[in-house]
Length: 380
Image 1 (spheres, rainbow, N blue to C red):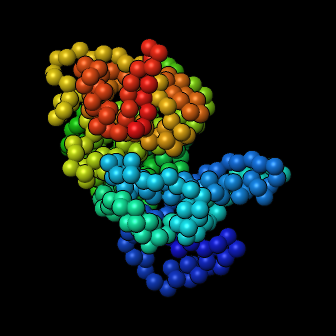
Image 2 (cartoon, rainbow, N blue to C red):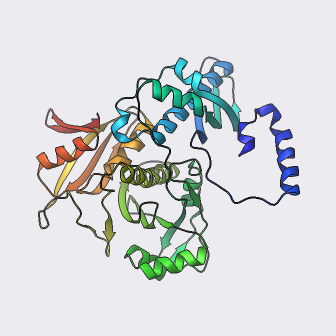
Image 3 (cartoon, helix red, strand yellow):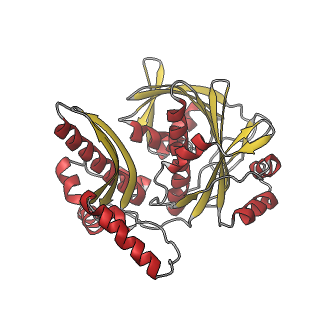
């Protein structure tokens, strides 16, 4: 979108120009947004004064933008080769910053920003460092966030807002977030969850879009359950996860939506690397069972419950780790017991030996070992 590349001072003129152009010409079919733009980056920084706080916030947004684009382009097996990003490197890779909203006090800066990364600059940097990358994007999909309340399906504004806050347009798996219609029935949603192709086809026809994923968010009993069902860019998807609710409900929803979308992104990247896409999980009445696929534990092996501490560098790293864990074949019923700024306690079931689990995690880029009687997991 043109206005995102304008400076704050010229945005009003840019809006007027865009309005005139739209009035003079019929709008073309919308294509995917650039992989090198990152939108809706939220920052909240404090410093000794307002100028310093703003400078820190801008620097944080630019660093996150470059890292996000690298995550889009560089395959999982190439992430380890990436050199450490310095402030000097990042500054040389930024093409522009646009301000969606900002607030500031004498010591604090809060803003939502769009950042453009230089396509030729980043490509040159990757080539100079011998880092493989791909710009292959998944077919555009639609995501329909809904909530189940009793015997009906509803458009949960808070759950939908959590998805709308994500930058899905510029993703490697571009998506459109839909609003549920009042006539959407629970029977149709249950049919899609059960893998009924006719129910999914009917739903896709009703909404007039191509591949469609239903994103269900349910809270209750101190838990928040996220379910994905339908078709994404890889094919059939039926995933579920449960988080323990401990804190702000809005934050829980945002993190759940971010993790769910990371699953969709990782499935596409995995399929492009020639590996087996993430395991599908089908839901029954309050239970979940794993669909056998290559590389999983033998059928009939009893799942063991695993408790582990996850170490990470920040929220983005944590979201990436959670998304990648959902791609590890054999892991079921993953729950987050507690979460802090640099670590989390998780619980999950695994139908197989600890040696097999360690090997599966190693193949997915994790280090999984024991420290003082506690299992510890971190990115390699």
